[in-house]
Amino acid sequence: MTTKVDPWADIQGKVDYDKLIKEFGTEKLDKHLIERLESDAKKKGMTLHHLIRRGIFFSHRDLKWILAEYDKGNKFFLYTGRGSSGEVHLGHIVPWMVTKWLQDVYGVELWFQITDDEKFLFKPELTLEESNRLAHENALDVLAVGFDPKRTKVFIDTEFAGTMYPIAIRIAKKLNFTTAKAVFGFTNEHNVGAIFYTTMQSVPCVLPSVIAGRNIPCLIPYAIDQDAHFRVTRDILPKLGYYKPAALHCRFLPPLTGPGKMSTTGSAKDSTIFMSDDPKTVRKKVMKYAFSGGKDTVEEHRKHGGDTTVDMAFQWLTYFEPDDEKLLDIKRRYEAGDLLSGELKQILVDTIVPILLEHQKRRGEARKAIGDCLIKDNKWNG
Image (cartoon, rainbow, N blue to C red; front, side, top):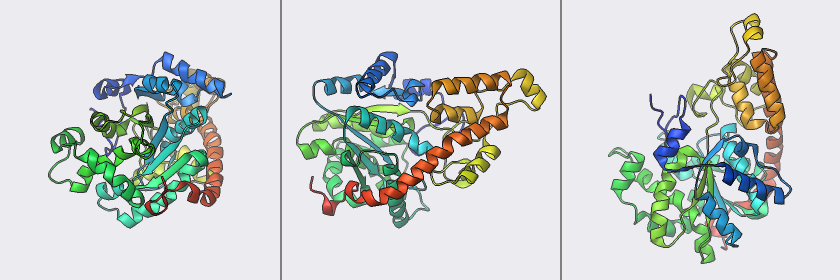
């Protein structure tokens, strides 16, 4: 069965990322670009981010070009975002981790869009008031990642629409319904706001350029399911005199129960690790729901070892354990049968709990700094 990957699909089952590269027309993140990123990091006394090193960021558009522009002195800015339909979980944090790394390595601005309008338009059960409330809560989670507050601008679409709308309608005028239907699968049942929405997600690609009065390159790190929006954007922006945005694509963090993309809806919430979860809750979820690659009995496991390719505790460690040697040692021990499934799950718990506790601490501190980073129409000076 083919796994559908688009901005609104409930993605279940194994995702063929090589196939997506061909289907979406992106480029594989090759060793030459990875070495370039590593070299730039070393200049700042940093190392290559493990999510790039391990191929979790696997694809790109025009990364070589944007780094060439950077070398010429045409410094790029970063743009990424979040749809405010619920609490932030570990899967949401994955692209943000590399976004922060890029900000630290290149010393650039980040424009972070929270799309309360999108979630209201696409989720029938969600009120605009609730989506906006969640947007303000999610903004605290954004700052808790550790972005440089002096170089970070967070905005919520409905509160920044006065600034965004004049750009959005220029983009909308270049997007016909035939294209929108072909790319997003719209039908007669979709509301007109949903059809218009992608133009709002295109705006941050050029907003700093509009404000500065000159073309500034844009780099967007995001999960591959959002690519449809930016394929449309890249077709339209040159017609308006702007650069195409460059992109870095990451794989999904699978749910504890197996392949796919973590979800915050229905029973899937039970096997999702939220950034607000306490240590007891984390342990309970991991022990109960993390799919094991171990054998049925201890004796069999000791003899034959476990399968790390399907074991979700190990797969999650590839995202959240930055030490390559430590990860390799865990892999060897588990596959040799020296490490049991329950012990591997406990290693995962011990790895992600400190990440969550640190995030929760910074989230509390972010309440004091949010006023400096959250921009709105009525307080925006450009």
